[in-house]
Length: 312
Ligand code: ASP
Image 1: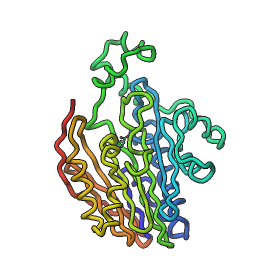
Image 2: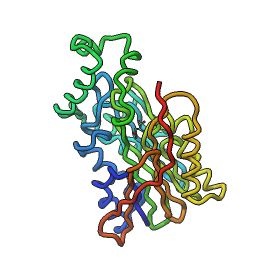
Image 3: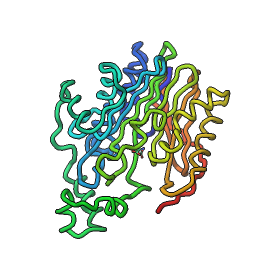
C-alpha cells in the first residue's frame, strides 16, 4: 500500500494514507486527498483560488482512473464548482461517458448536488491576475476584455509559462493491489477560455493500469498531450522497463518534441509493485510518498532529464 503525490499534495496525503490504513480503496483515497488540495486557498494551481483564465474566471480540469477496471472520468473547464475530482469520479461511476466539459460539466455538477461556489477567487488573487494583465494591457483593454474579439493575441502576451502552472497528482495502491490515479488543476494561468490541458485527457496527464502501474503529470499540459506521456510511461513498463527507465524514456519523448511551446514538465509514476519515481525537466522539484506504517510523508528529489525551453 502506498500513496505517491506531487509535493502540493502534502495537505491531503495523511488523509489518503489513513483511508488505506482503515482498509479503504485506492479510489476513495485519491478523491479524499485531492479534495483537500482543491479546498486549499494557498494553492494557486488547483481548485479554489486557483489562477484564472485570461478573463479572470477560474476553470477547473480533473480526471480519475481506476487501474483495476480501466474505467475513468474527467471534467474540463468546470466553472463555479470546487470539487472537480469528485465530479470526475461521478462521471466515471454514474454515467456512461468518460468526459464532460464546459456547460455540460457545470450542469452535471448541479445535478449531482454540488454546492455552487459563486466566487472562486480571493480578492488578492484577482489582483495578481489584474496586475499581470496590466503589464501588457491598458486599464481600458482590461475593462473591455470580456467583449474583445482578439483574445488569441492577448493570451500570447499574458501567458507566463514558467511560473503560473501546477496540478496536484495522487497515485494510490490499496491493500488489494488496486491502483488509482487522480489529477486536478486550475490549469495554465491566464489561459484562453475553454483551454484544456493534459489533466482531463486520459493517457496524457493521467493513466493507471493495475497490470503495469500508473503515471501522472504536471507542467506544460500541451506537451503531455502531444507525447501521450502518462500512457507512454505505463506502456514502457508493459514492455518490460522498470518504473525509473520508463519515466526516463517518457521524459526523453518530451525532450524530443519539435516545434514551439516547450516548457517545464514533471511526472510521478509507480509500477505494479508500488516502486515509485519522480522526474522533472528542471532542478529543485520534489514529490512525496507515504505508506501506512509512516507517520508522515517523505519528500524526495525528482530525477532531472533536462528539456531545453523553447517558446514562440
Ligand atoms: N498540466 C497542467 C495544465 O497544463 C498545469 C500544470 O500542471 O502545470 O493545465
